[in-house]
Image (tube, rainbow, N blue to C red; front, side, top):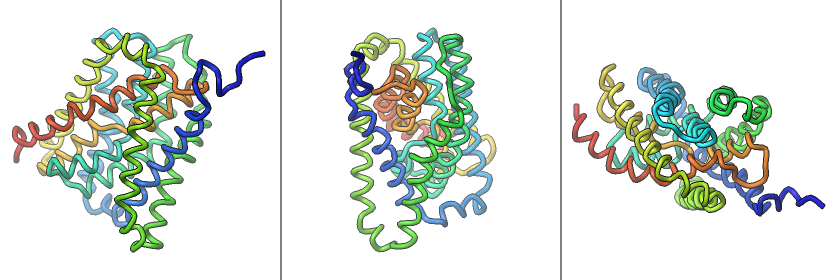
Length: 297
């Protein structure tokens, strides 16, 4: 008798249920911290917002692709790096932007806008990357199904959180810190679960995958603030775009990897995203302070 879906590969059904629910709550926490004024900033600071969106959606995957042309990673790991690069900024990017002295309002706006756009961009780009890096071994990617799933577990919770704050701002102010703390805890648990589930694969590729991820992170930080300076944005805006590019939504990346693999548990494609969920803070936190000193204008 074949093993049930929850038992295949020894991966508990808890992951299959807990991962999308955790992602939905994390996205709810993002919406819970938003107001409609955050979206109005698109009109108030169009140059900075447009630059941030283009850099996040276009430049991040481009930098990742160029690095993978230089470094020889196993196809599944390379594909996982590309999935990571398609993800919007992580919810902690807002906190890091504040610590760095960047424009927090811009960070919040970019995280929200790119997160909603990712419902369209991620499935299309994932299908392309699978064909490029996995070739004939690529799983069939149902772009519409992934898009609808992402809409259900990302866009809908963001909208619910936004409406909850709008209808009861006092309640939202009271519970926002607790919701954010729980969101961060769930993020940590998901990253640890992804690494634990694929521990042998992660350790076997750590010394090749780790440097690539850290170099990618550093390149994104420099690219973000460099382009911002080149086109005349302020220093705080540049720091914000830099951090938004460098900190990806690892939870979403892990969830998308699972949608692509169409298997129980957390697949190997999720390893780069899970590992990046740790290395990004090792690179980004000191990196943003170095950039602040070097690129002060």
